[in-house]
Length: 357
Image (cartoon, rainbow, N blue to C red):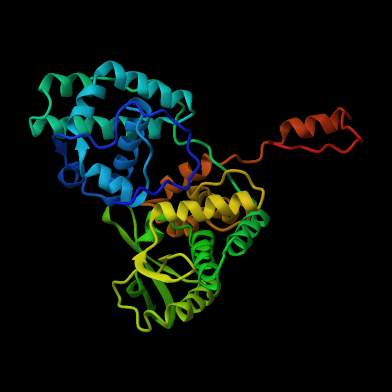
């Protein structure tokens, strides 16, 4: 496989152990579905195991197909060298130091514990090692997820425009427009967008709807706004020369080859991340993660007075209580200090320019 350097900005690291050593390998890609059936959980576990190899073994980070290739042939010798309770505990502490929240820490712990359990079942490591790793308790971290970004409606529009402007071909501009329009109106997770197929767009009761494949193999049907249909129709025209009649199971958004030629393969979750990362940098918005767009859609709807039950249906939460907790994590307005400064007459007449960077 050609060694393609990842485009995402990652910290450099000296190589301590080679990425592929001669000797026995463990196919984590094949073994994991028996423990975690959800594709979203599997992808998250692969990401955390890859991060563990980067931080503890000093390997280069991978994304996309490179990561899947790594997960299918993990060096047993490397795993023996890095899987211990002491190293695992230190790594979890490192994640806390980087600002990861409790949910992320728990998921990272589950990924490595699951890996050691599967290795023990395959008799590649001693049961004692698996047991000691499983006994490592996660360090204290802030509750919930990292706060992330909550973009204003103007910032969302700016990001959508930037995604089109960074394109180097008409096909890329139309593809990027579909990606950003669906994320910024339908509040899709990037995994959900990557899994959308042409057959998921259907006409129901004289309205176009999208079948969304969410977490835990759950599905939901949501109405599609006109702006999304326009973006999809424009993208379909670009697709026509290579795939005039897309099969229902073919991916809606595709990868692009050099020069803008459209691939038959779907755009990966890492590809979606790259589009948002490059667009946010171009727009001067700093770091914006894909989930920040879902968070921003929910916040914008709430500020506009949309009933919480409608927001909950769009987010595809199991019940409204989950949506209430989700919205409660957003940085809501807390203007008491500002009002008190007005009461005291302490406001400064000079204009204040704030740069969060």
